[in-house]
Length: 465
Ligand SMILES: *[C@@H]1O[C@H](CO)[C@@H](O)[C@H](O)[C@H]1NC(C)=O
Ligand SMILES: *[C@@H]1O[C@H](CO)[C@@H](O)[C@H](O)[C@H]1NC(C)=O
Ligand SMILES: *[C@@H]1O[C@H](CO)[C@@H](O)[C@H](O)[C@H]1NC(C)=O
Image (cartoon, rainbow, N blue to C red; front, side, top):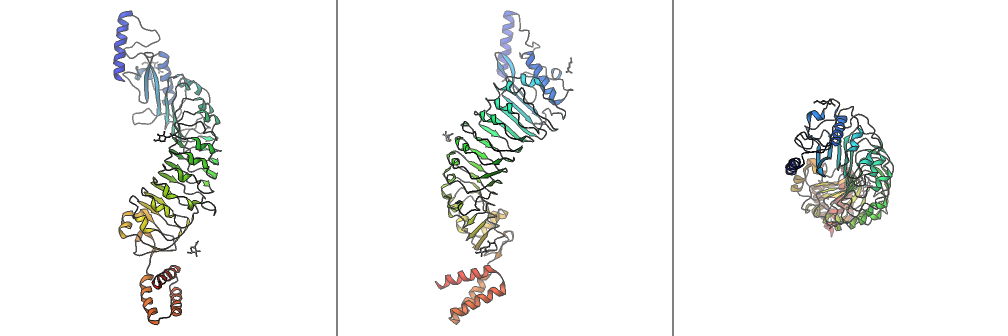
């Protein structure tokens, strides 16, 4: 930027030498040329946010030149400086903090060359953003961000829908509430739409048909209800879809399968049921799939277990906890070579744990199978438990035991083995199958653990073969 400035100053000097005049509306106090009205609008805007004691013309006589203001950037249009970026609030230590009694001055909307406008940690006391004026910024504004403003407790002004040049709309962690304005559907140039961490309610509008450039859609941590709209499947460029922590229900749309470039799908903590859409395993690009805390496995027809997990070889993080999943641990999961995190905890999974297969997954660094009804003995090596530490949990599986006692795993050792061997030799001596049955029953009664019976039975069956 500074070389542009130097060239421009040279040019000005040159022009002044030739004509001996300068435009009256342009400042000529030795700084860069800037229309006076633009400069005054900037001062007034900032003063509205930081307080009346702030005197811009005094402190920053040349805001686009040699006295830059933190949070303000400028660009040249027709040889004049205009403000193109404005960030209000405490971003850096030396930023101007917003006062609690701030005012949005109408002069803000005179800064018509603004491409980027950000409010960070600025609105702390209750404020309503008016509907008016936003249209004035429509011809240039590409990025609008409200981040961490607990004082913004109104609905999102519908006039934001007239900012049709927007490529990025970030409304993150404020107090915005009510329904989304439907004209948000007109912002079809968006690449990023983040509305996370507000109090939005109502359904997600079914109008994503036009959003062909959208890469990131984050509606998480609100109170959206209803179903995930079908038009979600038309956002063909989408990389990340996060609707976690809402009240969404119903089935996942089949159309999700059209999102061929999706890498993250986070639906955690909703009320989505009816299983995983048969198409989701066709999204080969997925690296993060988080479905936890949805009643997706609670019906027998959901087909959660029929998914060809082995097809989703790019998965790194897979969270299927708290979903009411039934049946065996799907074998396809043991084929996911890139998997680092696998959460299967707090379901109704039964059957044996494919310990050896899991242990051979090269990247696995966290495995949670606790809170199920898995059976048999865990066959992981001591090395595996040491590597995983607290990132392995298998407790609360009443019928599961392990060969070696590991304090942090919370399972009983399969101590039945020794006993079985001893008894087995007794049985052999007696050469009688009926006495074997009696012996097993007695052992169970004296011990009280169901898993001992199961273990002994399977052990004996093995030996008899
Ligand atoms: C800012 O300071 C200048 C003198 O440096 C003064 O003329 C002007 O009135 C002040 N403006 C405000 C808004 O206080
Ligand atoms: C999907 O990603 C590939 C590779 O990055 C890219 O070439 C393609 O254009 C993307 N598809 C869409 C619809 O954006
Ligand atoms: C756990 O599974 C066993 C069979 O292996 C079954 O008898 C028992 O009822 C199950 N427990 C629960 C809580 O589902």
